Image (cartoon, rainbow, N blue to C red; front, side):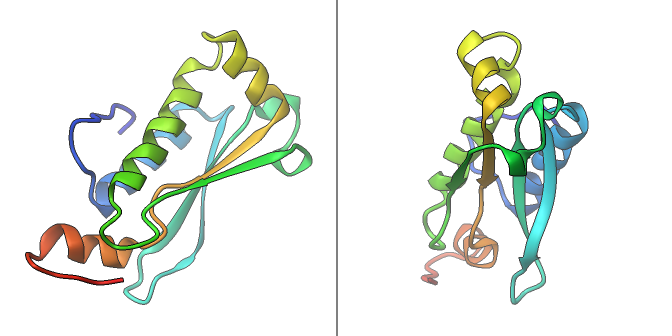
Length: 129
């Protein structure tokens, strides 16, 4: 899945598929890794975005973007997805973005709390941290 609609909230599985799609469709720019597991066994996904032709991400200044630290802050996930989408789709189109990815690396973690957000999104009247 590389197409994304920004008129809805995305659940954990949709976010996972979006990130996988971007890593597949933008192999020269995007890498998807997991940095751990949640108590419920969900992966904690991070998408690294940089122009790999100009060097590896770990040799460039980095910028961290994350969202959804708390269960009910699901708009943060969408902001992260929008930022990643903009960087990926505007590379080669927008001179500023192209130069930015040439010199910098972005680490995007759209959902810090996937367990809590799934409860928040699927169970009415729930309050989790």
